[in-house]
Figure: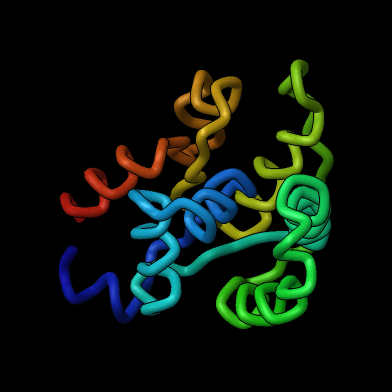
Length: 143
């Protein structure tokens, strides 16, 4: 990653599954989160995606619920929250995944980082690269 990236960080929408994996399990998703915490990339989200994050944590990780307020504040500090104006309806298996595309477009992102197969099958959408955490880290090294 060159020094310009720190001055003008790459804008990235992180899927909920990447945030959850990064917080709970580590690995490459955690490396992506760390880049955001270190201001080397700019994370972009939306109110709907933040609500989804809270919902997933409360249902799948009930022991984290009492920590969620702290996690939510920390994430909101580091993520740029956008309010998408346009509705997208191209993903059929999981309609909620369209919200990720909407946030990425509104936030003028270069990347979506996800583990979702239907999103990954798109590869790109309106010039936005859709990659796994591993692919994103590899791509970022080339910048």
